[in-house]
Length: 344
Length: 268
Image (cartoon, rainbow over all chains, first blue to last red; front, side):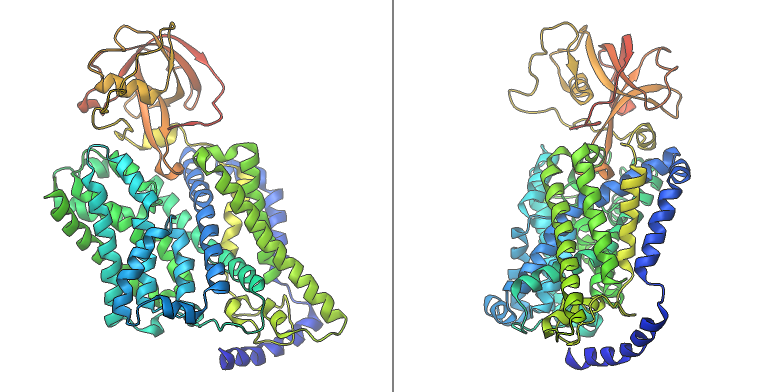
């Protein structure tokens, strides 16, 4: 880290002097201007949004933000604690030496984080910074939102007559996470992950643990929060635009059903704790496409893509997300055929 | 975005969440059980930003006094590099954001403005009309001995629409036949011209809302605009909820009364 940052410091020292003399407009002033304008025009703004479709969309947007914020905060707090208390040396001792062996451990560790997707992104990024092999951290990223007890119980409740859905979902999601981990261990390149996300935090560089914790959590919250909002916006727009007949026309067409449900899981970006209830209500569909929805959704959706691109960089997300999508569909179909015994 | 701006934004965000948690508006968006989580998230967000601001002020004061700032205080202005960049800048330029910081925190303004200025209402008739045939009714008969309790013996008991529809579809003992019941929901003018009394069921947040509804018989409800909250008294027509009509039973109205919306607009 030293040389890069030193270069930045030198580069930026020039404009800094100039700024002191000329007083440039900074983001703080822009911010205040936006707030004042919004306050002045809040009346017309509200009227503009007072159309049924826009109102529904804005409610869904706020709902996704409000619902995800506690989980994001949980994630950044965990991430801050990891940065402050789990030294890279300790991490290396806890995990098996070879990345391939660390992958299953990371997958099962996902059971312990009872949150949804938003919590696992900052945590897994922090794990990479603490020296955990990326393959294992990415397995954790995919496993944690999908195989934790809260999600499995929710699935059980949503499908009262089909206890095997829970097992199928568990196996499909765990397989997705581990296959992606092994694929990364075999083909992944470290330089795809943005430099800022893989810089190893050096322990004991003269800062108190409290300081590392608060600064890490605060920074992660502001950054990841912005991307969460982007995902919520996309999801709200699509939530309003996807017409209901899409579901009705799919009954009986298993291949099309699987593909459409996989795409819907991506664009609707539901929380992994709620998605089971939504697909349970789509009674026209056989179980297999619904299982695909449940396995794909927590692994990759528009909200997660935005978070991943923001956290790990676009080069990473552009490769990782499509691969996850394909692997998740395959794993879900296999788990479905194995556990549910066919499409049904 | 500068570090100070981020902190102000985070305080507004945490404050907005605490505001809707305090005044009950959060029920428009999420389930009641999320309340302690929302409060915790709001408080932590405000605290993290507050600690950041306090640290900036401290660093600025130290600079003003010409004291050398320790290495650990120097990273404050370099958010684009993450906290890992701590210590690289021993001169303490707290708050001097430079071109490398990201723009993504700007997006946090959207939910802040939406919550504080617009406060979108709970989902209603538009969502129900958009959902077509979707219905939150159970797809299998509830199992277990306590599946269907006796209806309360009082005249016209108040039922949840979800309970009433589940009974109409699955209760073979006919506990609703000939019974007057009361239902509370909002008016939906469906695209096919009929008028339904509906509630939305959410499991996590409003993004996963699924409607549950009864079809109001006759013309009595047509004069109410969409989203009017009504208490409807009447009885469910036996065997009117079929797979063919998406399990929407017909409700024969005895009387309709306008009511104020309940605090939690969603059914669970």
